[in-house]
Image (cartoon, rainbow, N blue to C red; front, side, top):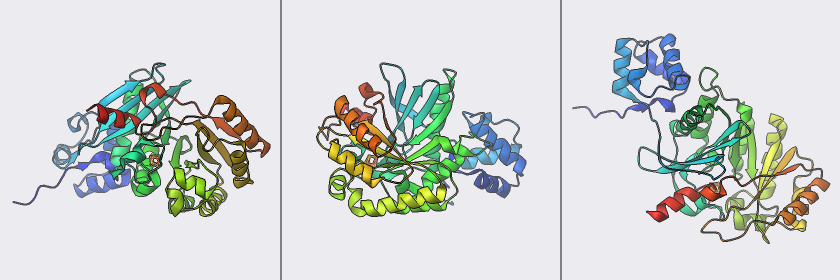
Amino acid sequence: MSPRIAPVNLYDLSRSTLGELVASWGGSAFYRDLLWSALYRDQVSSLEAIAGLRADLQERLVERTRLGHLAASHQAASSDGHTHKLLLKLEDGQTIETVVMRFKGRATVCLSTQAGCAMGCVFCATGQMGFVRHLTPGEIVGQVLYAVALLRASGESLRNVVLMGMGEPLHNYDGTMEAVDILCDPRGLALGPRFITLSTVGVVPGIRRLADEERPIQLAVSLHAATDAERSALVPAGRKWPLAELMDACREYSARRGKKIFFEWALIAGKNDSVEQAHTLGKLLAGMDAHVNLIPLNPTAGFREAPSTPGQVRAFQDVLASYALPSTVRQRRGIDIDAGCGQLKAQVEKRR
Ligand code: SF4
C-alpha cells in the first residue's frame, strides 16, 4: 500500500500554484479562479460548500486537499472593546497570537509569523519563550481570515495588517512573503500592500532582499537604542547586525524603494528614555526618510522594567523634533488583556 500523501492546505498556495494543481487534474483556469474566489471572496467553510465545480475536481479536492482554518483556543477583549486578542491553535497543537484592533473605523490585525521567536529581545514575552518553528503561508493567511470573519460579524472590514506579532517575519522570509502575496492578490482578499507593515528587529539580509523586490509594503525597524552596546543589551540580534550595517541596509532600502522607514522605540524608564539618548537617535537617523514610533513599554513577567513617564516621553519627542525627525507616541492598546506580543500565551500557559 502506498503511503497516504498529507492533504495540501489550500491556503498555502498562491493562485498560480493552485492553477498548476487544478491543471494537473485536467481543470482549466476557470476552475482555478472559481476555487480562488470561493477561498477568499466567499470564504467557504468546507470544500463541499464550493459550488460550480466539476464532480471529478470536487472529488480530487476532498481527497487531496484541506482548508486549514484556525480555531481560537482562548480569546480576550479589552475593557474599551477596541482590542480583541486571540490565541489560535495550529494543527500540530502549537498556539499563536493574533490581535484585532478597531480604531475609528479602521480595523487592523496584528499577525504572528512564527511559533515562538529566536531573536530573544529581553522585554518581549515571545522572545522569553524561544523559537519553535516557522508558520506556513497558510497559517499566516488563516489568521487574516479569522480576523475578517470576526469583523464581518459586526459589519466591519479589515484595512491594515501589521506583521508584528509572535516571531521575526524576516527570519521566515519566504513564508511571510508568500502570505503577503496571497493577501494582496487582486482577485482574492485584495488588501493594499501599502496598508501592510512588516516589523523587523533588524535582520539585515532580509532588509536587503526586501529592497531588491517589488513589494510595496511598509517597513518598520525595532531600534530601541541608538548605540550598539545599549541595543545589544535589549535586542541580542544587534550583536549579529550592528547599527552601522543596519543603517546602511535601511538607507539602501529607502533609496531603492523610495519609502519612509518607521523606527520603533519601546520607551523604558531609566534605560533608553534620556534626553541624551534622544540626541543620539536624532543623529543616527539624520537625513533619512524616517518616522519614529515611541511605545511606552508593556511590562512582561520576565522583564520587570517600567514604562517612561508622560513627561519623559514628551521630552524625548521634543529632542527628536529638534532634528526635524517626526515621531508619534503610540497607545498601548489592550494593556488589560496582555496584548503585548506573547503575553497572552504566556499567561494562559502559566494558568494551565
Ligand atoms: S520583539 Fe519580535 S523579534 Fe523580538 S523576541 Fe519578540 S517577537 Fe521576536
